[in-house]
Length: 205
Image 1 (tube, rainbow, N blue to C red):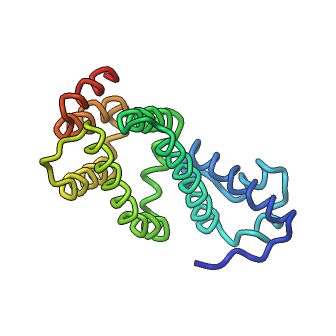
Image 2: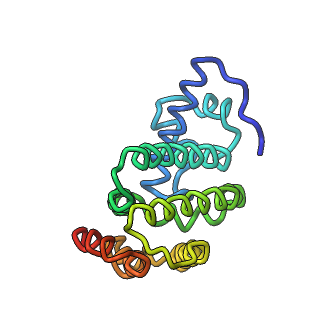
Image 3: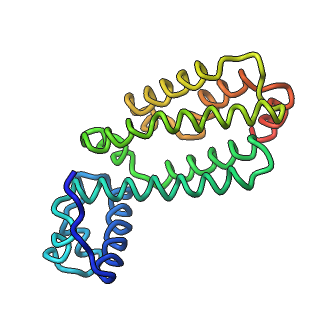
């Protein structure tokens, strides 16, 4: 991955604006449909100025996705730290995923798989996400919402496989996010919830 060129304070501000504008276009139109000209036009800057900061669209996409994921991760951490229980966190994640899939062009997800650098980024963060999942499940057990008698290492790997299957076969094109959660995620979730957890989950549904 080529390093981003050294930036002055003005260029750094422009750098952030470019990332935000580019990601907005990628999410709305899909990746292939967006040209560097489109990004420059959205910011009313010259393409030359854009290329002074980013050499190509793939570099721009990589940095944009990384910033987007970091922002979402920070938001989730705040929710986790301030939520009274794990079930409220699940409800937050569900609402955010539904909102995302209502506003993001499905082409964005399918086209991400064509960029090796993006796939490598996802792979590098997979174990960290799994560790966060394990900590979340431990919290759920301690709060009495999740069962104590399950192997959550295996549960986590199973949910990862389910997520990969959903993306690989692009089920989000055929079904709404509400359908996917209700018939896949929530069905799995009920299996490792205690009665207390199931009762809380049923109030969501």
